Structure formats: structure tokens, C-alpha cells
Length: 60
Image (cartoon, rainbow, N blue to C red; front, side, top):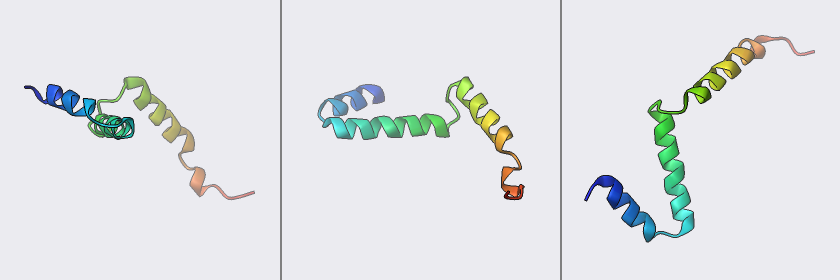
């Protein structure tokens, strides 16, 4: 049995709340490993660029 098959078999026995935690963790791992969608990386880059230097600006 493959790892994926084992995960699926275990998921079938879990309550939905635990399934949601598994999904959250899987999405975290994908993000952590840099496998996220290319558009997400560009949006992060755009936000970082837009916010660059904002913290150093004087308050009105």
C-alpha cells in the first residue's frame, strides 16, 4: 500500500474536523516546500514590493 493509499484509508475513519486539520497541514507543507501556485508567489512579491519602506515612513 502506498503512502497516499494509507493516508486516504486513515482519512476515511476520521471526523470531518480532523480531515480539515489534515488538509490545513498538507497545504502548509505545500507552501513551505515552495510548491504553491506561481500566481500566489507573484501576489506575495507584489504585496512585499508595495509595502517596502512603509514602516519607515513618518506618521501624519
